[in-house]
Each structure stands twice: as C-alpha cells, then as structure tokens.
Length: 158
Image (cartoon, one colour):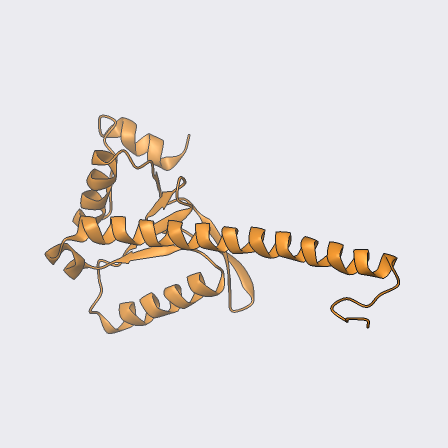
C-alpha cells in the first residue's frame, strides 16, 4: 500500500499536505474539478544523472505540475528553487511555480492563466507541426511531379 493511501486511511480519507499552501492549492483544484496526483514522481536529468523528483501536484489533464515553494526567501532554498526551475526547463517539464506571496494576489487566476497559456502553447506547437508536415508533403509532391516531366521545379521554359 502506498504511503499517501496509508496516510489517508489514518486521517479519515483526508489528504495530508506538507504545508498550508499545498492544502490551499489542493482545495482550489478540487473546487474546479481539476484532477491531480499529489507528489507524483517525474524523471529528470540533473547534472547528467537521471533522478526522480516529486513536485507537489501533477495535473494529468494538462500534463503539467504545480510546485509550491513555501520556504522562498531562504538563501539556500532560493538557490534550490532556481536550480529546480532550470532543470525542469531543460527537461521540458511544464511547472507552474507558486510562492507564499502568490496567495496575496488573485492566485487562482494565476494558476488558471498559466494552465491556459501552457495548453495554448501546446496547441499552437501541434498546429505548426501539422502545417509544416502538410506543407512539406505538398512541396515534395510538387517537386516529384515536376521531376516526372523532366523539369526542375520553379524554372520557366520559353
């Protein structure tokens, strides 16, 4: 039995979080019916070595993680934050960073806006790949068509 299930059973099926910030984020995700997995591992390459890291929340419908940096402001922790963000970026892991001061703003909108931006970027990237693939096939077809007539593409004969 995994630890999170064991903890839920001990605590009347309530999830146990490591901080108040994580609890707030979980409540928000639950309220908006955004499915999450708490502390799901992700494989990253850090300093040329494979490692499993455990960001706070994984949102499978968005293939995105939320990482709550609750101790931001501590010099060593801040170094760790920057290192994590860099490694996530290099590994192509989408992570929404949440800090204690994020809760002073409209933090729910901040998370939704980030999810929207990530989803839009993925859709645009996919559309560009499809367009390039389609355009490439049309160009190849044109090139092959012109070759079959013994002509070089885009050259006019008088």
